[in-house]
Image: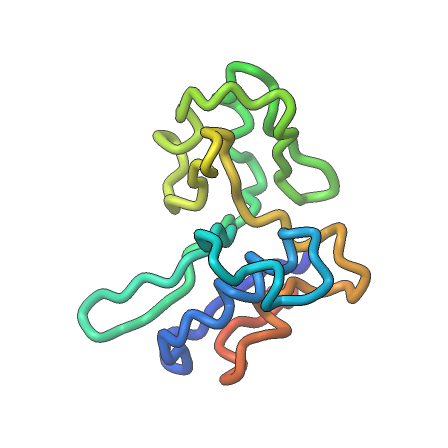
Length: 142
């Protein structure tokens, strides 16, 4: 199965992947109108440690601890993609506590959010990959 991978040596820490991710999940058709004046809520984030920048996103584990620990059944895995049913999420943060990658974050309303590989995206590849100017983020099978 294809997954998102980051090559830290090419990541500039520009945060463009966060903008593309937030826009792809905004439901809007114009990036400026969708994001201007709003708090950015991407489903991945750039972290910088020791002069190295890297994107933190869901790894879509084969045996995801977040799915096993979800008390409301909001998290599930289908065809290797871990997804959240936002209508079922109660915001208990259990998934945040068990995720070894720190990939889940609360949205403004307390519901958890995470990368879902832009499965609703018609282009077939995640928006963060398409928007990375340095090709530091790739979508491939390894």
